[in-house]
Length: 244
Image (cartoon, rainbow, N blue to C red):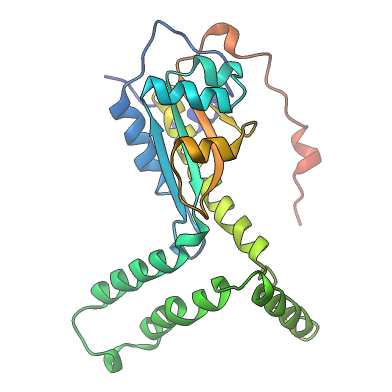
């Protein structure tokens, strides 16, 4: 039985490993459990605009490796995880949140909701659509300009364009990816997040629908000593830490 590392131990242990032991397999069920931890990551408005494709089929792995330019991390990985941002699922996920809220509030008429409950319902019925509904990017720009004018007089939310909402979805997906990689490190498995890839080819390999976007591909395995290319380097903490 594997004794899991503490959070600090797992973070310290995690490295971007680029070569994996070929003689040592990893347990698919353990990787899946780490992906279950991934979905517990914080996510904007709890919309969970992500999907996780756990690649265990060797033939598919080979295709994705080629789309990742056969870089060593992809080529030697025992399994791959493709993390996909799904901004286009906002409506479906908002409805799922609404259904959950209504169940948690209990079987009672809408007029019996208290102010907090009414706000939560309104948030997913009105505010979320007002942020995500767009037409060729035009509505996003109108919102952006209107709110930035209003921002001269009071604090406002300014990330309102289609490109901004894409970034929101990718940030949430990246938070989930980090949960996954730290979970893998905790059980002694290794990972390498890869951005260098032909994302269009990967979408075709996985038959992903229009509107889905590759966030990253994560190589998984057990580190070969040659797979860590050097000592860890970080900018001195005092240069990046600002206490105010």
